[in-house]
Image (cartoon, rainbow, N blue to C red; front, side, top):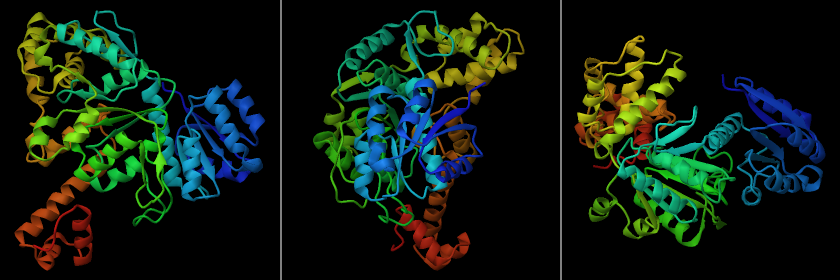
Length: 476
C-alpha cells in the first residue's frame, strides 16, 4: 500500500498551517509544522518529507536563507514558497533561489492543490528508477528497458553517450515505444539527477492554456489569472524539462521555445521582465518533423536546436526477437501487481504476437498481457485469447483517431491516462468535443451565430466567447 504524502509546513503563523490542513483535508497527507528555521532543519534532519511549504518572509527574510540551505543539504523535497508579496519580482527571486513553485498569500485552495499535485508527480517521476537490462533478470518494482535485440543495444549505447553530457536530446519513435521511459533514464544517469525532473505533454493541454503552463503568467494577464503563476521552465531552472509530443506545439510557441533554447530567457504571459533560466531539455515526438517542416508546420531552426543528440526508438516490429522477453517481463510484473498466480503462455500464443503488426508497440503488448492474465484464471494463455485481444487493443490510426467514434476516442483517452501518458482526460475530451460541435454548428449555419446558438442551446455571447477560445472564426 502506498504511504501517505508527508509535508513540512514552515510558518511562524499557526493560522497558515491550519488553513493548509483544511485545504488538504480531502487528501491522504500528513502535515508537520515548524515555526522557525532551526526547528525546520531539525525536522528535516530527522524526518522524510515529500514536500516543503515555507513562508519566505518570516524573521526578516529567513525563508530565503532556509531555501538556500535546503538546496545544499536537502535538495530532494520540492520547495513551495509562500509570500505576502504577490508581485512578479518575488516569484522570480523565489524560483531563482531553487523553489519549485511560488504561491502568494492568502493561499488559494485550488492553486495549493495544483502545486502539491505537480510536486508529488515531479518527485515520483524523478525517484522511480529505470533499469536498463537486456537480459531476463528484472528487478522487482522497477521500470525496465527490456530487450537484447541489435536495435535495443544501439539504444542503450546512445543512452550512455547522451546521459553524461548536458546536451539537448530529441527522442523519436512511434506511439507506445517507451519515449518517456528513455527520457527518465537519461535524466537519472545524467549530471542533474539530484534536481527535479519536470514533464509536460504538449498534446494533452489545450493550446490556449499551454503557453501559460510552459512559461507562467502574471496576475491579471487574462481572464481568470487571479495570481502570478510560475511555469514549467521556471520550475525546471537548474534541472531537467521533458517536453513530450513536441511536434504538437503551434508556431507561436515554437518561436518562444526557440528563443529559450537560444538565449536561455523568456517572459511570462502578460509580463515584460526577462527571466533567465538554465534548463536541460529532453524532447520527444512520434511525428515526422522533417515532413512537418516541408509542409510549413514546424520551424526548421527549432528542429536543428532540438536535434543536437537524437535517440531513435525502434517499433516493436523491428525487434520481434524481444517480444517473448517483454511478454515474460509483463507476465511477472502483472502477476505481482494484480496478486494472481504466475501464469504461463503457450508457444503458439507468443508466435501469434510475434507475427502480428502491433501498431501500438510496447504499450499495446503490455495491455494485451494484462488483459490476458485477468482472463486466464490461472490457466496458460493460448493463441485464441491473443487473437481476441489483438482486435480489442488495436489502436486507431493517429490521423483518423478524431474522425472515429466518440466512444473509441474516449476509450483511448482513458487507456492513455491509465498508462500515465495523459492527465485531466475529462477536460481534454469535453473541450475537444465541444470545439468540434461548435465548429460543425457554425459550418452548417454558414456562420450565422443566431442559428448556431439556437441549435446548441447557448446564448450568442457564450457561443462567440467559446468560438474565440477554441480559435474558431465566427465572421465567415
